[in-house]
Amino acid sequence: MNAWEVNFDGLVGLTHHYAGLSFGNEASTKHRFQVSNPQLAAKQGLLKMKALADAGFKQAVIPPQERPNVALLRQIGFSGTDEQVVEKAASQVPHLLSAASSASSMWVANAATVAPSADTLDGRVHLTVANLNNKFHRASEAPTTEALLRAIFRDEHHFSVHRALPQVAMFGDEGAANHNRFGGDYGQPGVQLFVYGRDEHGEQRPQRYPARQTLEASQAVARLNRVNPHQLIFAQQNPAVIDKGVFHNDVIAVSNRQVLFCHEQAFVDQSGLLAKLLARVPGFTPVVVPAARVSVEDAVATYLFNSQLLSKPDGSMMLVLPKESQQHEGVWRYLNEVLAQDNPINELKVFDLRESMANGGGPACLRLRVVLNERELAAVNPAVLMNDTLFNALNDWVDRHYRDRLTQADLADPQLLREGREALDRLTQILNLGSVYPFQR
Image 1: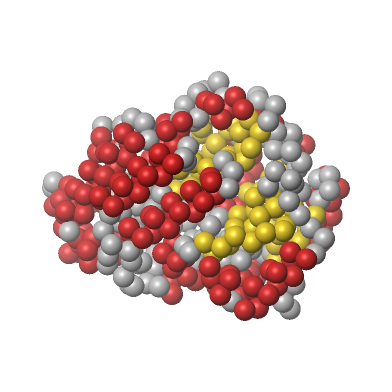
Image 2: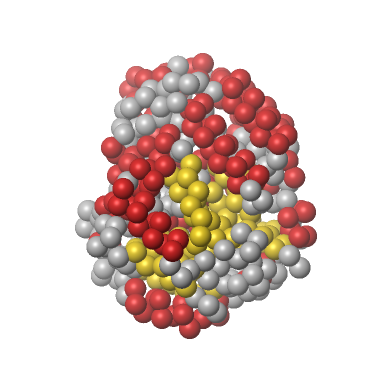
């Protein structure tokens, strides 16, 4: 049976703004308090989705979450009408209103970890929602993420959506941004590589920035997703690169089928990991970037590895990159050398995603990879699958509802809350999601 990797991209939310909320994410910190353009951000993401769909790749969309998160503000002590809650938070703790208004759910690589049916003991596709408990502005996403995934992957005969792990440091889980899958055809059993930043009982830890993903969380997700134990590898991210801004594995490595494209300093005991993959993945092809050619700092600045590695019908691969990688002379020169080397990568595709990039997320952050066979794809909510009709509908929706300028001070405007709810109510109709947002219940 045919199977494909379907990219479910996150749609940028209406409150996309630059607040520097993500300690350890260099781009997020660098662009703090700059003026954002939510409308442009959403359209840049939509253009990437449509271009890849037009090129023959399976593409779908995951909607944003409701923001400001009034329930979260109530949980920390604000009361009154919803508008009053927002106004009080704005006057007393504007940084917390900013966190409760974050559009970070657009980076759906952190939404969940996915196990294809070919890898699971019960033959279903499993999705475990990430708890994202390392950051306040993201830790509240899990309940709505679960509701959205259940509205998209409704058929329990084919799909099993698991709620997030306990909200404690031991089980810090950042989703698919720290997960890779290797193998041949997508529909055949593969090898799953879980990458963690810290082991609660281990000694190797970063000193400057937090290690967000734990070994304990990765092991728990593998159990929940019912991955065959013989198809699992766990590896630790190099703590030294975390301290240089590599907050997730997808900032230093990307994989697809038999190929691993990574920096030479990506992992603890990297030679040992590559040997394991060579022994277990037929045709394993590592493309390891030397530090002498691209430093970790340049990789972080350009998001060279926060790219999408996509298989074309002839077996070759396309590397989808942010414009920042093309604009860096040394990185772009090296990438063109990769094309001439003996590996499946033979095409570079560049997208302008500067609104997302300035907030700390590139092409790979914006998508959740879900391998689906024919029957499973047919069971997905069809309204979220990208095509001409959906692209036009979503662009029109963005034009109607999104602002083209937003600052942190604008979050205090109660009209922004009303605009967001009106927009999301309409979006649930476009995507046939039902009542998935708290304000709709």
